[in-house]
Image (cartoon, rainbow, N blue to C red; front, side, top):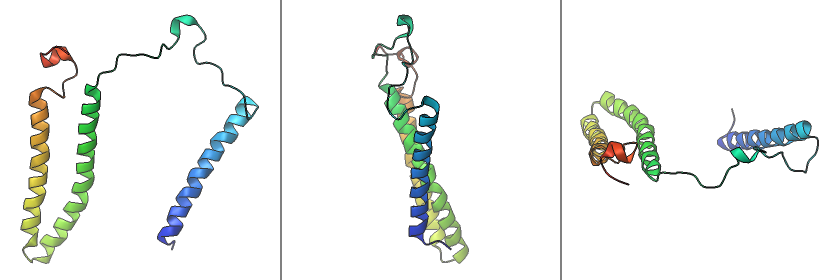
Length: 131
């Protein structure tokens, strides 16, 4: 059985192997180690101008998504521990269940607050406000 350090080392070796494979594949496809790749858009009609319409509201929605994904990542181990505590029969299972339900309630209250403010709506029209 691998020690924890050997597992980390194996993942590092695999990651560097993937990087090396991509570099070698580029060499095989393009024929040289140096040199520039062709431009993605050669005609002027489809040239990228460097500016685009970006809504900062996207950052808020992405942040909410990350918070809820983190919450799900924390809920699964907590549920496993809760099951063990409930099986022990010492009475700590009820206390852990209350704490877990409070955690979920706080997350749901935060989501409801953001939703009622209209922060999770897609556009200024759907929020009923001007940008």
